[in-house]
Image (cartoon, rainbow, N blue to C red; front, side, top):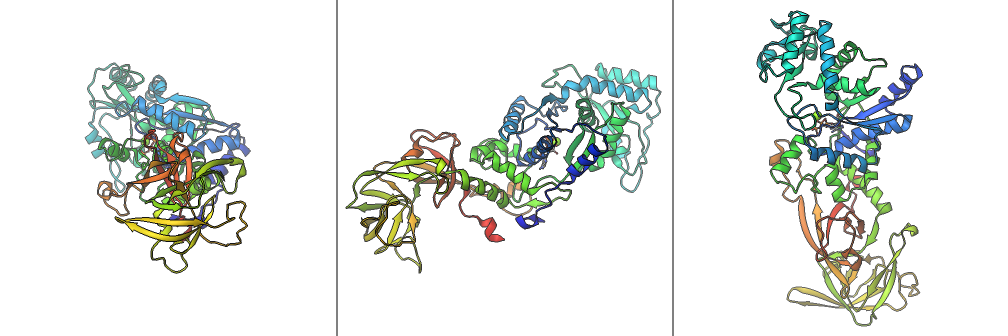
Length: 547
Ligand code: ATP
Ligand code: MG
């Protein structure tokens, strides 16, 4: 299902219904949520959805919101990712009450494992990973009990301690929860909860050589922090019985955390998994995690996406239990709505055509920065007898009802005058227009009585700057198959343009609407000699057109 504005899910969401019930019944006094990224890559727009849900609940219920790095796997994690994740969360405006690392709880997790062993609810198993997989059964058949399942509590305590002390090689032994090998839910068939892994961890160094498995660690992390509602994506629905089993049997104080699943965000022609995004970075298909074509938050930021528009998008798509794919153009239309209201207007022309206006005097004109918002102020633009207009705004053979410039026609230069095109000359393939000003037609003070439909942009040839525009499209073209076969060869097209003087020194990230071309943001590769602008979104709203 594609989500369009008219069939958005009800914004009153089912998670809030559960929370309302828990408050009403007295089960909880304060709502505590968390966002638990694994620091094995940069955050993407899917994570923004999870952040907005969790942080939104904190705000709505005046509760608490934690960020917790789920760093229990020593093999894939990196400090660079931790720093980028913190930066991206702050950029979206989600302020955390507590910032934690799951690895800080390793000692507590080890104690929980001892508790389970002492209760006869966990055992050390000598089967290999492959043997465990083989004996787990399937959806039709139950699993087979491990020959080590009935070891005594003493033996299990002794073996588990020796696992921790480094006596065994990777994979030689593991700790399994003793639940039910005939459970219809395969996750409950004595899942592995601790493994031996002689690997150094970026936070705890070489202190541990046993590491907890995700399904065991995550509920404990939540319970330690007093999380009331542990919100995760739908793939974990079948893991919920194990989640509940862990928190119940490890003797945590009530109220116990409650896992709630929602549908992850998918966007058309967009790769969202960190594993794939990492491959694009490692294979140098893109210019790093913050390449403006990437769906990462750092890429979207560099591209010029305002965080407010991302939050607005997440609110508008709502929360649901049904998996769906949101049209990429819907995200763009949220960005466009924001930029239309907030981006300064500026003039830039591509395929410039030289225009000579013999009767024009050099002067400084005052132009508004935004047509509807006077609080955004005004700026100065110089005008002279030699200007450039955009190649798209002139036609030698105009179609009927053409409102831009043609030989013998009129057009308004935005913020300046109405001009008449007297003559066209073509020399060595270059078109040059000779025009004259319509008397008394100055913008804001037009008494010429002439009505013209076309308004076009221009830059003063004597006072403009060369700029580079990066026109950006989706990294993938539509289709199925491996993403690497679906790379869009046109995802980045560089276009030379001429811009008004103010574009020379824009601050990195500053956003503009280049009238008629699109919304652009100053890129961090800009130099004084060559300012570079990323296309945030095109002007045209193909999303609303489709409706
Ligand atoms: P990926 O599959 O992209 O690598 P992940 O789920 O492994 O993502 P985590 O760092 O474990 O990434 O995720 C942190 C939180 O963000 C989790 O609660 C996860 O459910 C949520 N999340 C990840 N991807 C999405 C998505 N596409 N839509 C909504 N929430 C997401
Ligand atoms: Mg993950």
